[in-house]
Image 1 (spheres, one colour):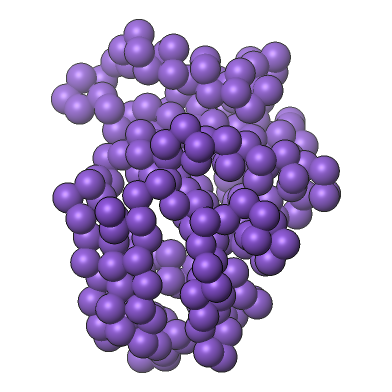
Image 2 (image 1 turned 30 degrees about the horizontal axis):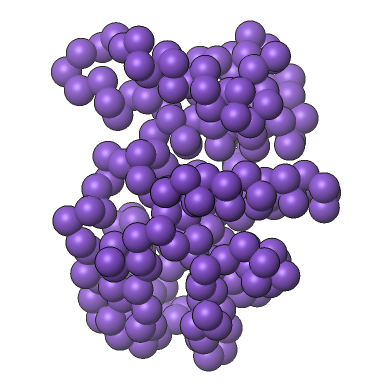
Length: 214
């Protein structure tokens, strides 16, 4: 079942079109890679799919299962994010805020979910540490754990392994692959074609001409 369908979609910013006439769908259960060189419109497309930018042409059709409350979105890490004045635990637990509704207190289920995601990513032993004291790889795991707390059905990630060495990058893609096998749809931006071929169910390759590889 298609979670979204892009029909003759044109994306860009201002009046500048970066990609045009995109026709593809994201199916429930996909591990969907968006790859391409810098400037090919990967992040712009992702932001358009999320509704942060308006299409410059064409349409995006969303299914009833495209529920924004169930989406975990991890943008590229900024310098501001790297200096968050909070503990690892506070940041990860804050991913559950969407479930609070009118009640300002976390439920027991939220706390258990945050603990489980800390353990899943192997960062439970520095839960009390300040986020800004961590290495880049550790910070990215913390932000992914937070994103997992927000996600119930869909993960959307903008270059989650950017700046990592090959070993940590492989661990990150393997983790996302295992989450996908558990039923979470994953959409991720990457420069790594080999990882996309190894783990992805489908690959959208952006460039001068776009191509749906598989």
